[in-house]
Amino acid sequence: MALFDLTGRVALVTGGNGGIGLGMARGLAACGARVIVTGRDAAKNAAAVQELGGSAAAFQADLRAPGAAERLLAEVLALAGGLDILVNNAGTNIRKRPELVTDEDWATVLDTNLTALMRLTRAAYPALKASGRGRVINIGSMLSIFGVPFSPAYGASKGAVVQYTKSLAAAWAADGITANAVLPGWIDTELTRGARRDVPGLHESVLARTPAKRWGDPKDFAGIAAFLASDAAAFVTGAAIPVDGGYSTQG
Ligand code: NDP
Image (cartoon, rainbow, N blue to C red; front, side, top):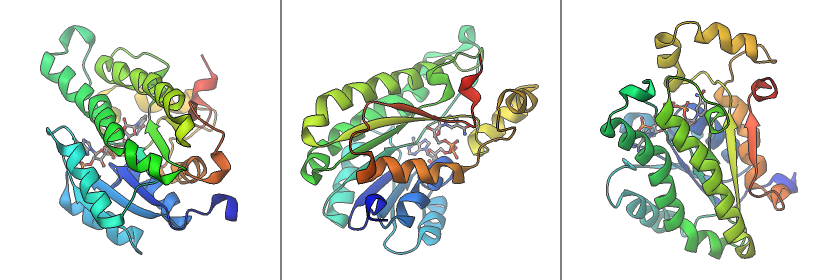
């Protein structure tokens, strides 16, 4: 359908080599976008490119490294000649109670989830503006809204992602750029497999509280990515949209 057609548009998905990022990359590619993924792991990058097929490409980058965001943007522009859709999905967590968090833990999580996202978005602004229909899709979390005892740095970073997204929406609407956050519920990925192992009762409590009575799957993110990237969502900006099987409807 023309409303959701992304033919001719270039999308960069950070952390697009697996999990939720790959689920979003699949949705964008299915609507015709040229998708470029990035991550630290070259083997995962190569597998994702093979799976996405077509004109998909990958660049290896550790987005915490100094200058990484700017280098990545330059590589994308050299390859594809522009950028229309930026999906800031790369993220990490260190599960500790607040009293045990070290400065290093804090820096690792905040640098990855917030500062790298800001640097890449800032670097992408000229290209997104030139697109005339630029899209920023930032990945938050249920912990953008709620608190749990075991993820204070992660919660701080994901709360900030939502507020940063609102700033982008306010600042860049005049440039035709929309910025929205997607808030995943509990999704079965590498990230949460560790949590399920380490946090007693987590699996059961997620099932009990999620009205859909299941964990989410990366496939659940194809549609929201395609929608937010498309012309259909031209007037949707500054929103934080749960994709959570109803988890956030219950207190
Ligand atoms: P994964 O661990 O599967 O994905 C994380 C991705 O981020 C990987 O592709 C990883 O690639 C990339 N990444 C991590 N650190 C860096 C870095 N320094 N530089 C570049 N890339 C990096 O987990 P998910 O798919 O679950 O997570 C994706 C996003 O969704 C994250 O932002 C997470 O916080 C968020 N989220 C996930 C939820 C869930 O239930 N799973 C719930 C709420 C939010 P590589 O390993 O190659 O570096």
